[in-house]
Image (cartoon, rainbow, N blue to C red):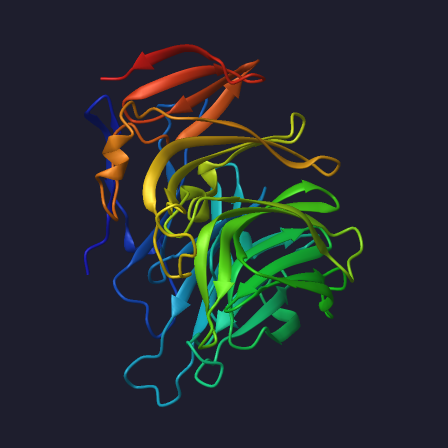
Amino acid sequence: MNLPDICEERMGLTVFEKEIPATEVYYADVSSCYDSFTTVVALNMKEDLEEPVYKTILTGPTTCMYVSLSNIYLAIPVYPSMEETEYREYTAVYRIRVDGAKIDCAASGQVPGFVLNQFSMDEYDGYFRIATTTGHVARTAEEATARNNIYVLDMDLKVVGRLEGLAPGERIHSARFMGDRCYLVTFRKVDPLFVIDVSDPENPRVLGKLKIPGYSDYLHPLDENHLIGIGKETVPAEEGDFSWYQGVKISLFDVSDVEKPKEIDKYVIGDRGTDTPVLRNHKALLFDRRRGLLVLPVLVAEIDREKTPNPPPYMHGEFTFQGAYVFEVSPEQGIVFKGRITHIDDPEELLKSGFYFSSPYMVKRALYIDDVLYTISDKRVKMNDISTLELINEVELP
């Protein structure tokens, strides 16, 4: 087996290259390890000529990672080998202790099920919490085997508490740990938002839940008692145990009464076919709590109601807009639409694109400096007044 090299390139020149000796490789005894490495590298940001320090872990493909101030947690899905007679699906977890340039493989453990993303993991008060889904979803409840679970592990990655079997037949769409609470969104036909108490590591328990149409793929804290959810609106199917997804939905949840969480406001963008990269990558979202500013890039699909007054729920709209949607969000005012900014000069490009649209002028990110809102595509940067959204300037990129 060939061990990897570490290469650091600066200005196109190879500055450092070194083969990793076998003594520096940590091996994990799991059945589906494969020939895959995860390498953790520590770089001195003040002394750039200092050699990197590294630790390589032969664990199989790392799919999710959570980083605290002193630990890196790696989550690796493990499937049964050909020799195993019992089918098991579980996630192996490794805790990598990091102290400056010192990297140590501190502990390993495992939990049933698979992890959605980094927000399904958390370290708090000496414990590691993780949300997983076991089984699979299906169009009918009879065929679905999915179950959702919360596990609490100590620093040796031994399970000390568990809450299993949540939302049978559904899978986790989003999760967020916030101190002594965990918020969990599952979905198949309607969206249950679970409020879970994890203050007692040995006895996590459900405090309350809310069932509404639609689902949230990403949860973001507004304050201690309010959450922002970004996902899709849905319409339940007349036949079958599923729903048709519709436009992008922004929800504002009030969880001050943990037993009775509420959706106090929502804003739906477009019809079926509308999409935002925030559903898959939280870095596409701009949110500033002090200003109540929320900005997300959206590709909008809309159905012409003059041509189709009562469209069926499975009908896709035509693309009509791509750019940044700008909102103000607060518990008092709810979700207030301020306006939108596009980099695409000719809307006909969208209408002619069919079911797929791509352009170097698609807005991907937004940021602000002082009172100027910047929207960024591959070919252009626009600067708008953050209050009025009036155009200040724009720069073409090569």
